[in-house]
Length: 194
Length: 194
DNA sequence: TCGATTTGGTAGACAGTGTCTATGAGTGAT
DNA sequence: ATCACTCATAGACACTGTCTACCAAATCGA
Image (cartoon, rainbow over all chains, first blue to last red; front, side):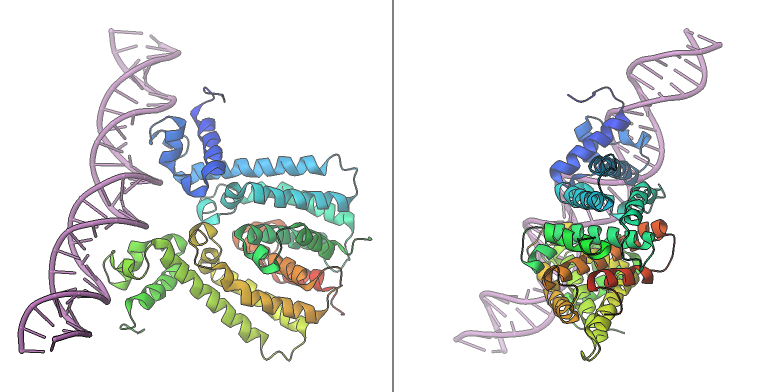
């Protein structure tokens, strides 16, 4: 019983997120979203001039959701930087694997980047958190924190992508991402024992 | 003046690759490929029952191309494993960034994986090469070679993806991938000086 | 050599898509 | 009451992937 009266704009995004998690990315047609929202296919146009604008709004919701989750597992920052990074990595992988449709959409630059909605900037705050944690974790200092953070982000992202795609489970012959996550963190932050 | 008489099957793939590199992934409609190949829109159906089958064939061409390039830069195997891994990584990133459309298509599992064409297996030989090189490079032995190789592959892949998407250049504030590549390799294989 | 069959392509229909435009039903201000 | 404005509807258009009927040319068996 979600807010039936919350305005079409928000309802379209809400319905889109729902449809995305239920049926996947190919179900996110403009007309289908409108149908699920109970309006005509021309209605969304007032709030989202084009289909891509609507998809971008849905993706933005995903970035916000991911940001919230990360902030939550990071906690109050009293855990060690390394523990926080581990939590962040696990959170990132968990999100990617349990919200495949959304994660897919969030990085479909053919759908989102083309219109200059500044979606790339949405992930910047998250990256800053990452850089800060990396700096405080004091990795082997053969690279600057932003570079290490970038490489680490890429590592998490690539593992999420390839694991979700099925390549990594097939290649490594296991069905547990955890070893890959640990390997990635140990690699970028130095071996476990500090 | 490519082989005009090489059979429609091969010509469709060839035209598809061409169209993909020239116009991007969204130009790869069945009808447009048929148009460029000079046949009716129903013609491809004899060789590729569905649109996805044609796209998969094009992607397969991409995997083959990438495999060839990697094999070439690996060379005769007389360079040090670490140097070969560096060349492999650079090749992977270079391919991803100079063939964006193809790289994008190759990992669009929503387009390719759904039909069981065994496209995932296409990258297995490449992964075995990677595992072998990693084993011979003797990384800090806190993880088995397949795991290190998987994490490294994920790292290359993620960097390629996020860099191509524009997030990493924006986040790290540079326009050179090389530092990220070096950081990734040093991380997974241990610091440069062996 | 002749008829039959298979091969390989054409052409049209169908439902579905995103976008655009014309239309109209309400609502509030003057 | 009238005007203006907001917001949604409905239909058209071009395009898509798939399906089906058709057909011409080649191949094959006798």
